[in-house]
Amino acid sequence: MEDLSIIIDGRPLTTYPLGKPGFHAGTETFVIQLAKGLAERGHTVHTLTPDLDHEEQRGTTEWWWGPENHPRYADVVIGVFALSHLGDLVAPLLVMAPNGIDPPLYDYKDQVDAYACFTQAHADLMVKRMRIDPWACHITGLGVIPPSYRRDTIHREYGRMLWANDPTRGLWHCLDIYDAVRKQVPEASLVVSYGFDQQFQAQEWRDTALAEVMWECKRRLATTPGVESMGQLTELQMVKQQMQTHVHAMPSDPQNVGSQLHGLTQLELAAAGVPLVLSDIEAFPEIFGEVAEILPLPGMMRKATEKDMVRVDAQDWADVVVSIMKDTKKWRAMSKAGRELAEKHTWAAVIDRWETLLQTLLAQLRAKAAA
Image (cartoon, rainbow, N blue to C red; front, top):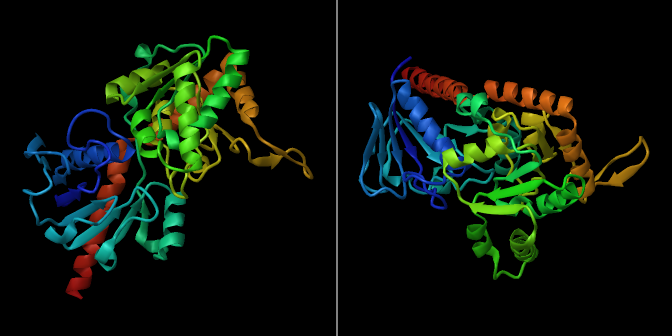
């Protein structure tokens, strides 16, 4: 394949570190893996960040830059999250890599050649909400590195649960489920990561229902036996916590449509062999439907019989979690299925799809120009 010059514009990503070490959320992890993967294939990759003061060379053809002094010309520009900084970049091909369904495109919408989506659910919502053509959306996915979760280093703790997502996506449901689990498994524990304090500070003085439940979550994190709030963890620290987890319950309940477009943490937990109990929100059934227990959110309705509906609650979730914890045969089957799923969703496969997409789009542009 042709070696390309690629600029990945991550300057709009200002919530969590991108160029600097430390905690990286899902979008930042995606950018890091995309840059590294494409550079390892021989492409020259320049990643622009909002948080580096000086350029860094991280591989033979991989460069990371601050927000101002950086290359401006390339074969391809990949805009991440928003297209708010493209005025100083020039390339024949512009690919948008949104982490949501309403990416700020400003005056650049007509210049976007393709949208790289995480899942089919992501693509469908993009088409619906942004009125773009379905053929412009390409599913490139997200991935994991299965060897990071070596089986000989896994130290499972019976009854251990883990919340490692944005707390505004339903931490309150998880705490309710955990309380119900502890009644049946007294030694159960719950680790909460991802940075509760940062999200709490963004909500605490707002006159909203979300602010009220965040205050209640703060109280429960401090007073509930067996709950440990660890804040933001590095990649290695997170891998350790994932490999200690017994069962993962994620009742994802995002505040906005299009906020659960994949499930990178859940894919990592699957790689660690952790059985998954997930809500039926957006992309979860698409990615994990064959390996996870999928339930409606607490408070939602489900079919009990052909004619009757019943309301799901935290106890229903807890019963499923406990049944997996106590049934060794079921636990092993779900653990094995999760690992096999993760082995299909690798970063190497993601980079394959990105390479094919970029090469195909550039060939089409050149053929059109030559016609």
